[in-house]
Image (cartoon, rainbow, N blue to C red):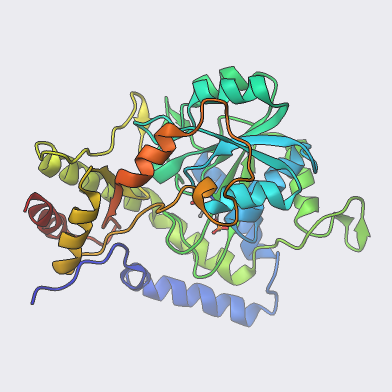
Length: 366
Ligand SMILES: *Cc1c(COP(=O)(O)O)cnc(C)c1O
């Protein structure tokens, strides 16, 4: 019996920085200060430096990061916000939580991200007040064209899966009004619990986010607007600061492993490897292939002890809680529905070996 290959291995990742992580945790335990303190400030500064511009405002999770970004750019209950149905449900849940109406737009079949033409059709049909562009799987959406179609309408980049990705030299999260990030444990920069952040170069937007995340406080105990409790704790911030020191290296390792998959699977009939747009630097949060025989491949991997998954098995508009009640772009969502039937995520994480990838590919080739 060969050893199983997991889709992700969070234990191995924690083990790889064990001593530094334990030292950070101990520092926080002994500090007597546990929410929004020096560790959070240090992490926000380090994260903004990693992104390369603007300020980072930490929040409790990536869903809040999307919701508060939208609120910070002025979106209110009843406003229409365009986004994709081919995303983590969190993107759409965040829009609805502030009382706004998600308008679902189709995807580009190559990058699996928001299709600018479908967005244009949605904007002609609905009074769209903001756009949430999701940088899915680790690759940026077509931001130049999306910004062009959006015109004066603010665009939020949902960077939960694309921490460190670039497009034409610009880092994900710096190309529009604000960029929202998730530090859910499996994300490229993962905490040991929940966490999130918003990055923006607009100082008013950053100040508003700092108020919104803590009851709308301008000063302690003085709410100048209605806010929420969406704070990052000191423990997660300290652990994230340790994880952040490895992120660039880990993203490069993800890219090496993806290149190996690309090479090994290039000539395999009915398997399409991810396509990377010109000028894009993909950070492979997920390595997603496409095949008409997706279910057969998944079975074969499972029989060989290899993990795989679907991201996602249903588009948002196909899930019970959303079916039949959200408006779509007039183009419909044909590319979204076709992709959902054929996508398959293969094991990919920084602790995976070349030999693991070769074994996955041998099984896929049959
Ligand atoms: C993970 C994810 C989120 C939500 O992040 P949480 O931290 O789990 O709230 C939002 N959008 C996308 C695209 C995601 O992948």
